Image (cartoon, rainbow, N blue to C red):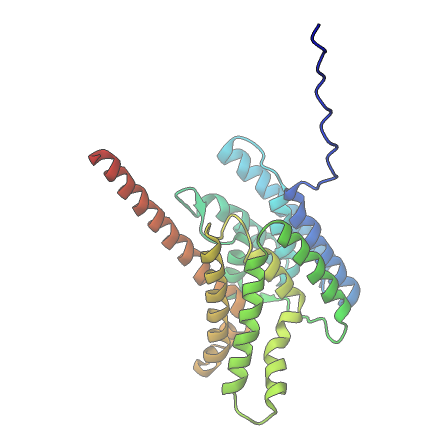
Length: 293
């Protein structure tokens, strides 16, 4: 008689968080640490409106376009990003920013891919067309390093698990390198170290935490190749540095003040378009090779 064989019980899975909730958890941690430390929220009611309207827009537009309500974690991230980063005495930017962000995801697409990071695009548009009514968050962590250290530790761990840490690391290293370069060519009225830390100081702000961990790493709007992702991070940092250095010389203080948003607005879609064109050409070449084989 053949002995019965019982299948081994599958190993118990460790507790895992749905990857779609990682970004909302991290951005909420940034908001909590920043607000408790320095009160980065100008008005929590405006931020709540921004988040709520973003979720409603995503549900409505998604239902109209795809005939189903999409997962709303992305809309939460868009809403809270706009709610934190937008600064205005008016209420309308807190409605228009999430609306632009959500609608752009469904309207501005090419070959099934997003070209712009939705939140970054919405903020850049508002800053450009309404500079007298809209500003951006610019508060820094000051001398208190612990909130920044906690966010960087938490954010780096999560981004590493999502296999996108190389983008953040490339951008940060390039940011400091270009800060050193700008300090070198600035008027020598202060010590080089003083000029360097003045140029590097913005990266300690909560705005940059959002930019580094969410905007330049957005899976839907970054290129597919790892090497190209790192190249794009370098180009974004280079474009930002150029705007910071040259824009004031031309009197374009506005471009220098919001350099990261504009740099990503230019470089992000350009890299996506180039990658799409290269992929399409490779497909046509492969199709022609198969046809003539």
